[in-house]
Image (cartoon, rainbow, N blue to C red):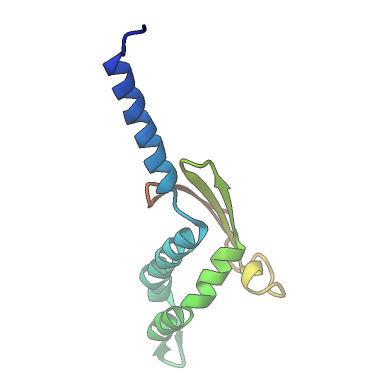
Amino acid sequence: MKSWNLPLSLGTAIVTGLLMSLAISNPSQPEYEEYAREQLSEYLQQNVCPQAPKLWGKSLKQECKRLVNSNQSEIKEIISQSTERYNFILFSIYKTELSITKVSPFLPSNLLPSYHFGTLGVGHKFYIYQVEQQ
């Protein structure tokens, strides 16, 4: 009769539990889209809207913020259409390509810069590991 190896069994149980918890907590595409919508909206309001020009003596800063706030579902839809998910069971990698042509294909592509985002999703959290302006 073989002897039972407690340390090996305990180690196997711990590793199995850890792998199962990672697989269960692998964030879904909708969770990523919500996260990305929040991040993009915050970025627009803090970095883009303050630079809005004055038109006829009136700053467009508040109008820009209002537009961002009132178009949350559209922002999420753009992110959804611009994202590819690579599911590795224990974690996911999300690659998002944002460009003006995704929003409005008839506008020239050089009107605004395009951005590439790489994000790691693991344990119900997201970690942006790559941002490139193209």
